[in-house]
Image 1 (cartoon, each protein chain N blue to C red):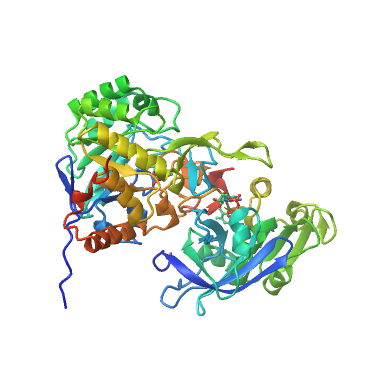
Image 2: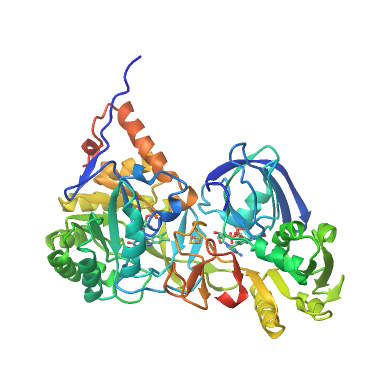
Length: 265
Length: 308
Ligand SMILES: Cc1cc2nc3c(=O)[nH]c(=O)nc-3n(C[C@H](O)[C@H](O)[C@H](O)COP(=O)(O)OP(=O)(O)OC[C@H]3O[C@@H](n4cnc5c(N)ncnc54)[C@H](O)[C@@H]3O)c2cc1C
Ligand SMILES: Cc1cc2nc3c(=O)[nH]c(=O)nc-3n(C[C@H](O)[C@H](O)[C@H](O)COP(=O)(O)O)c2cc1C
Ligand code: FES
């Protein structure tokens, strides 16, 4: 990871709804506290200003500009915390901890890419935003995005970096069905990076195994600390790891991105 | 220019001198490793570790944590890598940090506790032991020892026979009379007590009509429990003469002072570390500031200063 992690008061540069229930925030770290870089798949804990909400909300990096120290977050207004965050106005401040966690293994991905591997970036629902930074840092991949309806948020931006296709549950745009239905229309990728709901990740894991593809999955779990001390956010691993000794890895610290074969989901 | 008046923040717990009365609450700070890059750990009065058992524990299923109004519920289930790895990795790390080390010990049976206590007895990096007989999140042992005054008395006695370091018994608030359990710990030979552990709670997801936590119940902590904790520290302080480490929702120096004035010699910060990892440093600075404003030379003078 880059520079030291600390809780920082960031400036809200812009705040807008980009779709129904989907908010985009651009936050600027103060000079001197700007992370040098963001690894796609990393996240921040962002703290609602209302003190009754004690815990940070984990939100993935959707984009990061190191020069400006500008962090872009795109999130669904799910409950009270994210609703409060969506009401932030430009010029206000909000506390952020991070960048946190281990993102996608960029060196390995770049090497595989230069060797000619077909790489698919899969995002389902609110798992779409984190894949955008990956698409930007690893141009020339295939992106498959799963939506509910033809409200295709961020789709146009993916097209700048990746060969992009959509699946919609209601068939109102792209392929009717799931991201798997899109994948199955073409030659299987050699490597898959995926973020999305658990049933989608399970299906991707199985698909990758059946097709001999490598897969990296970005997991979600409820978090308290975000930095590896509370053991709230664990997932079950297929082998004993050094930290826990008991088939448990911390999504916030060892993850959120895992090799598919390393986790039991 | 006037010289800044020096404030003495040192406190003594069971003969062990802490440079100040502020430490993390067990389970909210790991062994400090993860926070080392964010703060100077040697500024803390002590580091209190996550619960350590004789063998590795896998803990409960997820979800293990959730937020509630001004607090959180946790049902980690005392996941830990076991005492061997703890000594090899965590204690080795703590050797480099200039502060006192309090190891929190958990178990399912009396033998489990005694095994850990014995394994730690030759480790000179361990300054104090804190015995968790109050975790609401594991099925066997743990809280049962802490809820019944007779078994608390008994296990305290057995641990005291084996322990080389002074023993702090950590008490549960899930009892009818905290004075009674505090007295049982003191009678069993405890050198100090710490309280409160979490209060058993539950959260239900109304949309999905099911429990939020996989364990169904979880321990409530954070600012929501502070008034309960302050009251219990006060009652315990009236009942015993051994030192008390107070905790429950502390997030500022003012919060910490409530506990100290109610009878605590030292305080621990738990869930609020998750809100801001630097909470403890703010508390330490705030305590010094308060003493200066009130012309208090030694923070220890304030312990139990408020009473009927
Ligand atoms: C590593 C990671 C990255 C994430 N990235 C994104 C993202 O880029 N965009 C996005 O829209 N969402 C993302 N999420 C999910 C997001 O964290 C939750 O939607 C959010 O925490 C809900 O908070 P709330 O206050 O609105 O909901 P409430 O239900 O009121 O929250 C109550 C508590 O539960 C937690 N919680 C509730 N739902 C989730 C969930 N699905 N995952 C984790 N914790 C939850 C909250 O953090 C809070 O502590 C991510 C989750 C993780 C773990
Ligand atoms: C995530 C979490 C893990 C905890 N783990 C332990 C533990 O291992 N041993 C223990 O004695 N207490 C444990 N506790 C209880 C705390 O040490 C403390 O007694 C309690 O949370 C009240 O303080 P707080 O309100 O400041 O958090 C844990 C609490 C939390 C929130
Ligand atoms: S959120 Fe605390 S360990 Fe991951």
